[in-house]
Length: 581
Image (cartoon, rainbow, N blue to C red; front, side, top):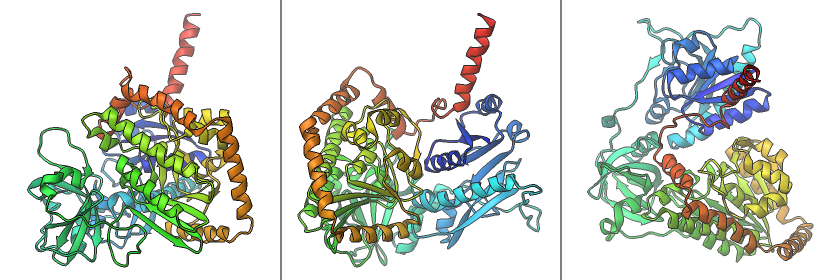
């Protein structure tokens, strides 16, 4: 089929559906929801069999849905209606939720139901549920709806009417007054639900140490105690606040009311040293097991000859100091007797490369960019040069830009079926990229294959990445099953008598590669390009970073996504040639 995605942005769900439906043989084009006239033009140009809206903030124009079949992917079960479905699910502590594919109609979220897939919730943020449970259910629901579309005689079911004649349950967006915390009265569970329900956007409005802020990314703490609402500890950029029955860690804040554009940043960065001068730092040794609830960015453990390193960096962005902490943990892991080392990333993200928000917040963004990419390079080099162990990157979550090449620095890459990779930099203002990609990529896919991957601005699913040579194994199962399989196979590898031979072969190849062209030469060449990106006359990278960080609305759909506009351009050129031979 010819399918047009109408979407507010090319987010994680849209990318996953894009990959899945193309894998099924459908032709997909994308149009950003900018204006009704633009949407109507896209439909006229593309003449789609179907319009799917996986991520939309406005109604589809009536002139479109009356003449073309349009599906809305709604992150709620049958009957749920409104723009804050997941927010309400978290606040209500719903145990089961779902995703429903609805036909666009005159009433918002009230059209006929083509498919609905339920899922069990877990104590997690809105963003985490969206990336994992909602995305998986959405893929199943859209595929089921497509099967039903091809089934003769199938008719979508109308929403059941309530006794008063209304359809479903309409729940409006939450007002600011509904997103508040009473630190004296609210317990830890309700505080976590409030912050998690507002995660990503808009955050919970609050005052911390006299500063008006919004709160993001909360984790429970079972050991530390204090007066309700008090900041009682700091750790790796996060603050710990006491509740009436425990405490919570809050990793990120955004200041409110300054009048200037403000960014979501690590909590300690927003509050500043003066406000925190009397707050104790409570470090967490990543190698010491934790028995209760807490938050820590890095966790290491060694089991029967296998070393595991997990890093839970917010939204996959890795700032300079985070890279330094990871490098230190890696060096400590190398000092153990583990024969196999497994990097597991975080549950939602592996890594998306440098931390654009932290860079944007610095007075000199070029210098901050340079320091960040150098820190990423140091970490990547440390993985490449670990030639006395077998190294595995186990991707539980998505990876992008330099994060992909950090993964490729390992000897093997394993990942879950639903992982999406964006192994390119060009969408960030034609950024050249570093992280030794010019060495790591051709080593796996060849020079021509590497050029194709770096020139392609579209996402790759796990199976496509395996076919391209970027991934070695795709392991079926959900996140928990993937973790079990990774551990079992890594433990088996550590006991494999052939492991020593594989490590010797790896050492020999590394010596040959270094003799042919040293790693330092690859880095020097990449950083020469990066210097132009950061300090040169072309401001494209800085403009793209600003737009990304401040969520500047798109003024048009990029041509690498809008297939229909490329088709339209070719048709116009052909018509012009016939008219003016």
